[in-house]
Length: 398
Ligand code: CTP
Image 1 (cartoon, rainbow, N blue to C red):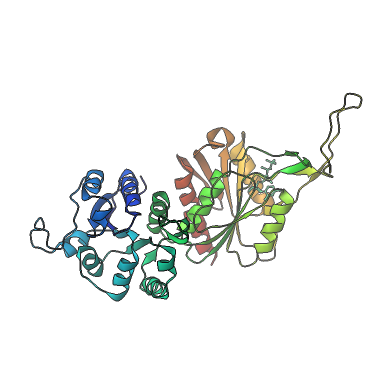
Image 2 (tube, rainbow, N blue to C red):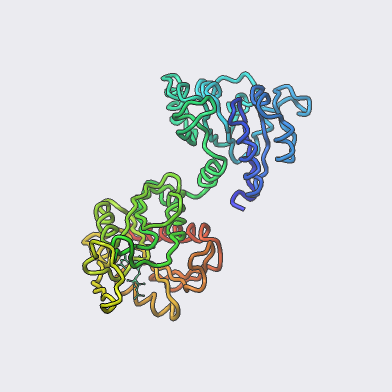
């Protein structure tokens, strides 16, 4: 329940994407938000208020002069207690109105009279989006502190392809959740490694491990939600890149090492979540190894991979380094030993039985203040707690 207790106004303006607003509303309420829907007259031509009324469990307003408002002040009353106003889809016309402070219907009047922050998810034909007038209006909105979410590029309802498509409901929801997170890493650069590495034996085989990448991706996302500029160096995983995060995909430990050192200057924080293979075949076979019955099984000689975290921590002016320790037993002793050996301020430890591959985990943080238990929770919420701890340590370091 990521929006528990939040009071939102969902504004819907005219456009084919109005159907996606119904799904967005459902997801908002599922996350615990109470949502008041306000539609423009044009929006009601695409989806009827009945749909939004049923999904929000509240009356839907479209008219400035709605008699249901006792004092005829719908534009003030509806947004007075809102934590945010989200307009999705936001048409080109609506963006223009807000940019110029026009107020000729309930939604635009409510937005002009707001105290709450405003987030808009534009949706329009690509030519409308690229029109210099829309470009100017969007720049004005951004300058006024309005959060513009999307749009995406892709196939449009008109049959054309290009920028202007509204983001999917889940993407808008994620941006909204991110918006409400404390900005404890605002403007900071954060570099992470995540996932397994794959060390080639021959062109089709290799040594890898079962790291899912979920914890690293969750931290990348949490850091971005906290306002950081995040780069994620990821081994092979099947996870989508979190919104607003730059991802560099790598395969082997050597590639991960190179990608990290290419970016490490200017980073405020380095978080090594990847399960880096400790060893790699010294000389991968150039062709696929064939099975033969005459000879003995082939021997694969292994050599040690570089310790990425260890090397970063040993830089003359290292970023704040965070390591992970996934252990089968003796967590406290092993984690503390790793923290001292790699000379890093924070180690996040977990027992493999508690969370490997899943969406939940139980963690222990080890830093100069001792050991701190993070009880069982989703990786997403645990990631936020790790980010909060990192922000505190950064603050202390200053
Ligand atoms: N790490 C790294 N580069 C490596 C190996 C590990 O950056 N070549 C990082 C991991 O991302 C993690 C931490 O170091 O943050 C793990 O420490 P380490 O003890 O070196 O890794 P393990 O392989 O878990 O050690 P062991 O096998 O001894 O338990």
